[in-house]
Every structure is written in structure tokens, then in C-alpha cells.
Amino acid sequence: MKLSELMPEDAFAPEDGAVEVRGLTLDSRRVEPGFLFAALPGVKTHGRDFIPQAVAQGAAVILTDIAVEGLDIPVLVTDEPAAVLAELAARFYPRQPEHVVAVTGTNGKSSTVEFLRQVWSAAGRDAACLGTLGVTRGTAREVTGYTTPDAVALHRALDALASDGVTHLAMEASSHGLKQHRMDGVAVSVGAFTNLTQDHLDYHPDFADYFVSKELLFSERVAEGGRAVVNVDSEWGRRMAETARQRGLDTVTIGWRGEDLSIREITPRPASQDVSFAWKGAEHSLEIPLVGEFQILNALCAAAIALGDGVETETVLATLRQLEGVPGRLEKVGETREAAPVLVDYAHTPDGLDKLLRAARPHTQGRVIVVFGCGGDRDPSKRQKMGAIAASQADHIIVTDDNPRSEDPAAIRAAVLKGCPEAEEIADRSAAIRRGVSMLGEGDCLLIAGKGHETGQIVNGTTLPFDDREEARKALGEREAAHV
Ligand SMILES: CC(=O)N[C@H]1[C@@H](OP(=O)(O)OP(=O)(O)OC[C@H]2O[C@@H](n3ccc(=O)[nH]c3=O)[C@H](O)[C@@H]2O)O[C@H](CO)[C@@H](O)[C@@H]1O[C@H](C)C(=O)N[C@@H](C)C(=O)N[C@H](CCC(=O)O)C(=O)O
Ligand SMILES: Nc1ncnc2c1ncn2[C@@H]1O[C@H](COP(=O)(O)OP(=O)(O)OP(=O)(O)O)[C@@H](O)[C@H]1O
Ligand SMILES: N[C@H](CCC[C@H](N)C(=O)O)C(=O)O
Ligand SMILES: [Mg+2]
Image 1 (cartoon, rainbow, N blue to C red):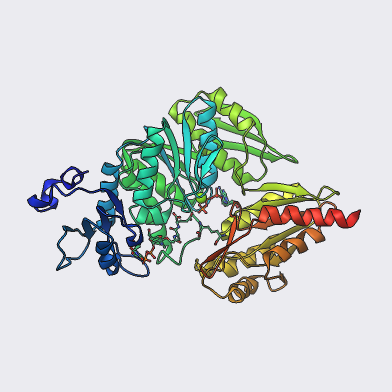
Image 2: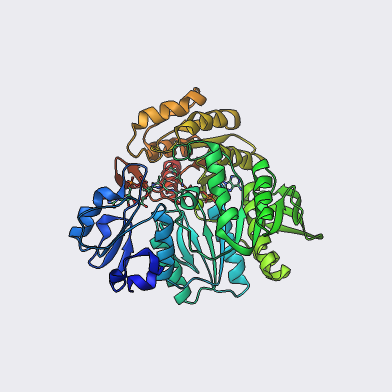
């Protein structure tokens, strides 16, 4: 594509309009001959440090925020190069599914987009979802590694999905993604909000910045005339709804305090929950085959989006009655011969862990045992809080490692243990899981939290193969073998 087709005329010198742009990237290591390299400011460094490398690899155009002298290729300078890159990516990869829903919030995004995909598919729509678990369409899943991929990867994925016939896409909007303009240029018809509690205070300077980043979905990203579906059970949700209304979006409120979808009652059963709710005044009751109140909140968020899209109520209810759980979200991986269950969950925030432990309680006669740790190079202020939550909710705690990344794992565990000094400490996650499984008595429940669907343990830049679900199954097998 020629530069003149990618950008408005006044953005480049007239003689540069004919320069052929063969691809876009924000990573110098991925530059190929003819690529536009976007040298963006980052958290650790600035992409401009890598311009010589990009030029050496054949870059045809540079996009950045400060003038660069001495290059014989066009250099486009703008205050917001990340936003411009996303707009360029939207032109370079022009196709998008006709209906794009973006879900934001601290917890529940992956679950909501997956549930929505299931509802749309049941209604005969060609549907996909995109987020932490990758791009999912039918039974096929392609891992992307990010909750919201970078602008180029995202627009490429949207183009590929639309070209492949996908008309309905539910995607996750992370606060990093919104703040870094990764989603600019996406035609979002519906924005949804789940909840807002502490996370990512390593990246966001304070909670206000975290809120404002999420709020961008409603203040800027949802298209004019679009819809907002907002859980208003928290003060933050009510503020999001207010922002959406001020933008003139069709604002649908949901939750225990929701006006459009209001939850009446949730009753836990051994492996399901009875749920009553009203949608636009009409009452519905059904049994949903998932445990944990938070899963119902996510399922009803997906339901409210689909109902607002015009999916028939009967189809929505029928899908909810057979809803399939999301990998690594309260996923039951097995049980002991005395029927004590082992569940793997992705709780990696204080509120997530709190909700997880509360979810297990009504289904457990005996002890709730939890194995968890906290990620390295992530918000350190959540560690002690997660320890304290475990101390107040669980009967036995085993603190272990969870992606220490570049940090000293012992120091991370020590920070967690400040909140739960009585806990057991077992550094090796596999050994911690074996210990948890070996402790299970009749009526007990083991929760393994923090890694969910992940298939690796990140230690010092290396990802070692590791899957909580496999480890738990192995430990259950060993326990069983020891009994015979
Ligand atoms: C905190 C954060 O958002 N980090 C992302 C950010 O990195 P950064 O700001 O540290 O970048 P940097 O290292 O300072 O480099 C500056 C620029 O130079 C470029 N560069 C760098 C090195 C090089 O050799 N060549 C080069 O061109 C980089 O591509 C970047 O554009 O920009 C990079 C390029 O897009 C991302 O790879 C990186 O994701 C890192 C790996 C990451 O872990 N991100 C996580 C925290 C993240 O984005 N998570 C969210 C939310 C998760 C959730 O709650 O679900 C997500 O959406 O996944
Ligand atoms: N509605 C909710 N309220 C509180 N906690 C929740 C909710 N939904 C999920 N959780 C907790 O958060 C964990 C992650 O859920 P999910 O993957 O759906 O969230 P997410 O927002 O996509 O997370 P991420 O930020 O990692 O992308 C779950 O395993 C559960 O412990
Ligand atoms: N999306 C979250 C996932 C955290 C999962 C946990 N296993 C960890 O590594 O901290 C993050 O990147 O902060
Ligand atoms: Mg997610």
C-alpha cells in the first residue's frame, strides 16, 4: 500500500506519497524490507533507540514523536504515534467483523467474551472471541499472548476474522490496551464493563489512572450511537454508566442493582446454580451449570449484550442452561476417591481471590484449601492483600510461586506471607499442588489459583512448561496409586 493511501496528504512530504509500505510494526526486531517502523515511547525504553536497527533491516518509513535527523527515508513525526499507528493499521487491514463488542473491567473479561461467543454461536451467528486465551472460533484457538494485542496484531486479526466470515466478535479491552491506543480504529458497537478493583498498580501510577484508562472505552472507543452494558453494582460501574450516558450511548445497566437486567436471586447447588433475573421487566428463572456467583455475573453480562443485539430470549436462556465453563476458570480437574474436588482458577487479584474463596464455601462441607502465589514484575501492593484475604477465607493456605519473571521468588512469597503468616510455604509449584492434593479429606476442596489456563511458568525470561491442571491430575493419580 502506498503511503498516500495510508495517511492524509498533509502528513508527509509530497514526494514521499509514492513510497510503498509493505507492512507495519512497533518492534524493530520484526522489521522487514519496506516496513513502516513505529518508534514508540515505552515503559522501559523508547523505540527511537532501535531506529538504526530498523533502517538496517530495510524499514521504508519511520513514525515517531521526535524529529530524527540524517535518515534518507521518510520520518513522520506526531505527538501521538501510538494512536496514529493504530489508525494506519486500521487502513492497512481494513476489514473488521461487522459487530464488535469490547469488554473491560478488572475481572471477568475473558469469561464474558467466551460466554458471549457461545450465545451468538447458538443463535447461528458466525462468532469469535479474542483476549487472554487467544482468538477462539468454534473449537479452534490461536494463542496471542496478550489480553489486548498491539494495534498491528489486533487489526491484522480483525481483518483475518472478517475475511473468514466472522460477523460477531467479542474482545477484551485491557487498561494497557486502552491507554496505549492498541484498540484505536476498531469500530466498537458495544462496550461492556464488569467491575473495577485493584490490579496493575505497577503500570498505572494510581487507581484514578487505572479507572480513566478503562473509562476510555466509553468516552472514546465505542462508536457514536453505540451501546454500553454496565454492571452498576459498584460505585465505579455507576460512574462508567454516567460517562456512557453523557456520550449519548444507549446505556444498559445490569447486576444486583441493574435496571435493565436485574438479578433477583442466585442459589448454589452442588454443581450448578439456580438463577432468577428480570430483563426489561420480564422475569426468568433457570439453572446454570456453573459454580461461583462471579460466573453468573459474567454469564448474565454476556446475556444482556446478546439480548440487546436482538438474540431471542429463548436462545439466550437455552445457551445459559448448557453453558460450558471457560478453561482455567473454576475448572474442575478431578476429585479424590472420597469426592473431594480439585479446581483450577485464574484468580490473580485480591478481589478475584476473595470471590473465588467465597464461591467455594457453599459447596464445601470440610476445609477450603488454597494453593496460590503472586506474579513477579506485577503490582507488588496486591501480594500482602491477597495473603490477608486467603488468611481470612481459607482453612489452609499453601503459598507458592506464580511466574516470578525477573524477581526473586522468595521475596514475592515473603510479601504474600506477610498477609498470611500461618500459611505453609512451598516454593516449587508442583510440590505445592501435590501437598494440597495429599491433604484432601472427605468434604474438603482444593483450589489452585492464579495460573488458570496458563501452560508455562515464567522464570527469568524463560517459560518452563507448567500446567496446574496437568500437575493436579498427576498428583491425584499418584494419590490414587498409593491407595491400591
Ligand atoms: C507494560 C506494557 O504494557 N508493556 C508492553 C509495552 O512494553 P514497554 O512499554 O515496556 O516497551 P519498551 O520495552 O519500553 O520498548 C519501547 C518500544 O520499543 C520497542 N522495541 C523494544 C525493544 C527492541 O529491541 N525493539 C523495539 O522496537 C517496543 O516494541 C516498544 O514499542 O509495549 C510492548 C510492545 O507492544 C509490549 O510487548 C509490552 O508488553 C509486555 C511484554 C507485557 O508484559 N505487557 C502486559 C503487562 C500487558 O500488556 N498486559 C495487558 C493486560 C493484562 C490483563 O490484565 O489481562 C494485556 O492487554 O495483555
Ligand atoms: N465478575 C467477577 N468478579 C470478581 N472476580 C471475578 C469475576 N469474574 C472472574 N473473576 C475472577 O477473576 C479470574 C479471571 O477471570 P477472567 O479471566 O474472566 O478475567 P479477566 O478480566 O479476563 O482477567 P485478565 O485481566 O487476566 O484478562 C477468575 O478466575 C476469577 O477468579
Ligand atoms: N493478565 C494478568 C495475568 C496475571 C496472571 C498471573 N499468573 C501472573 O503471572 O501474575 C497480568 O498479566 O497481570
Ligand atoms: Mg482476560
